[in-house]
Every structure is written in structure tokens, then in C-alpha cells.
Image (cartoon, rainbow, N blue to C red; front, top):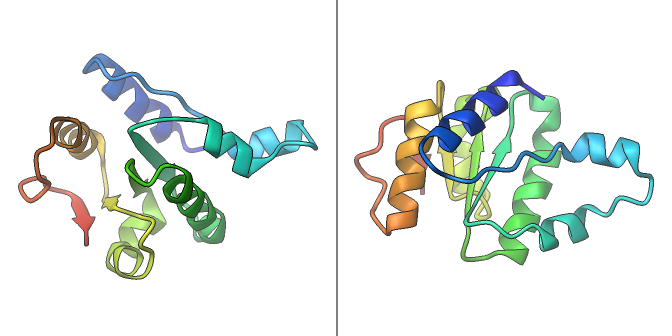
Length: 132
């Protein structure tokens, strides 16, 4: 897992937001009976942030995004990371389960996105994001 995930969670924590990091790949390795669908269904949040750093993880990230949106349709599904940044337009146009891609260094963008989403404000003035 990229260390940036921990940095982003720390930034959000400092702003007063509760965060939780789940390494789904590690969970699957440690527990042969791990059920991804059940885990996502039972993990309730306003915002689901999914790392898509390396392109080889693209199908897994999209599967997680699809499950998040299926089980929690009113929550915001966000992708970030190197590959998400490079393919932001393609992702937001093709995958309806992804609401927003945070591009590049995400600290400020993710904080503003979180504040705006939770307060019901729009995203149009937030730099560093792509949404459809």
C-alpha cells in the first residue's frame, strides 16, 4: 500500500474527519474465507477512497468501486493515485461507480472535496479533481 494513503488519512484526521484504512489485498491473504462483498457491504461510510496507483490493480480497484456504489449508492466513491491521475477522464466517463478522481498530490483536494461533499456544496471550485 502506498505510504501516501496513510498521509492522506492523517490529513483528514487533523481536519476532524474520522478515517479507516482497509488493505483488502492483505485481508484476502490473511484470511482465506475473506469475503470482499460482505466486507464492503458492512463497512458504512460517507466517502470511499480507493487507491489506484499501479495499472495492474485497475480491475481490482474498479471491482471495489462497483461494490461500494452497489451497496452504498448515496456515498461518494473517489479514486486517487498515479494510474487514476493518468486516466482520470476515461475513468469518470466509463465507470459510473466512480464519482470523483483526485489527481496528483491529493492532500488539499481531498480535504476540500470531503468538506464540500459533507456540507452539500458542489465540486466546481476544487482544484485537482475530475468528475463527470
